[in-house]
Image (cartoon, rainbow over all chains, first blue to last red; front, side, top):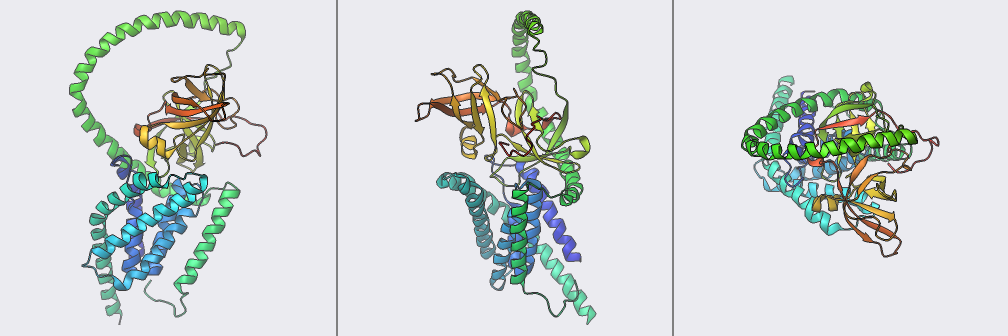
Length: 172
Length: 291
């Protein structure tokens, strides 16, 4: 219960920052994608199941407020969380390389999917332009934010795991 | 959850179920044009107050810094503006005369009702689209303030966009610069119609949107011409300024013109908008035309 509440809080804060503060801090009208960082990091820290659910709810939030159809972002984020969950076995908290690579890959594939389904299918074929001017800047900005945000999420998760372990051993 | 049941469902099946649910919901909301319904209300009551709060703090800070920075400019500008005021006063007098003449003529022609003053409600922009692909945004007024889907949104004198979804205390607006937006427009002086469509790439490159299919006499429409919403649109009220033609050229079919429009509204610094509470009434409700 404690975990669910904390995760809900993290998603809420990131969602709200993403669509208010970071829109104001946008460089060249590009803003970072915080929800990807959250989904992806919980994916490889906690496994497929949690990554999937967290992704699903983050996406649903975007769908409700900004989507043109309900369910598209939810589906994309759920899959991203799920796929990130496969890397749980290779994840070590001290190593920042894997998280950075995974989060970048997630952000890039998220943008590719959005381009493919919401732009390419409507006849916007200038992939090179969108890649250079939307996807790449967002990727760089997201990585910059990741360096701060990821460590915060990591600490929170470690604290939660510590509390869970303690209460579990008390229970036995 | 402290205890786990022995027979928990494998994650891949949950994923499969979620996928199916999402696809079905997508299909339903796309075909039936439904929105979140009760989910909208719940989400609205949880998130909108927070967005409002953050925005108020942000606006306050921005305003303070702006005040400090602009104090110097203001002194200089004041001087320039004073000169301009004199100039404009003179101009105004001329225009007043013309207006008087126009009023008289209108009365004669019984055209009083052409541009009725619409009921409007002012609202504040509280959140922008979280991603970088679309330009939709939220305002802090919703169904409770009488806002409905398909109402037009303006700012200053120009068209901002259209309400595409509402919650109890918020409304979602798609701006005309959004890549998926299409508006039926016309050139003000010649009443030739065209389609104005938002474009992410051209908006990013030089702050313009595109128009296509303008049929007019040879070079009747020129750069700088005003484009307003047309009389045939089933959602946009007639005669709202969209923008000014920035570039125009003849299409390869030699019949129509296309080009770019500079929007009349500054979308980068949009803080307050007006929602027009009058909707364009169209009798055939079933038609799913431009939006």
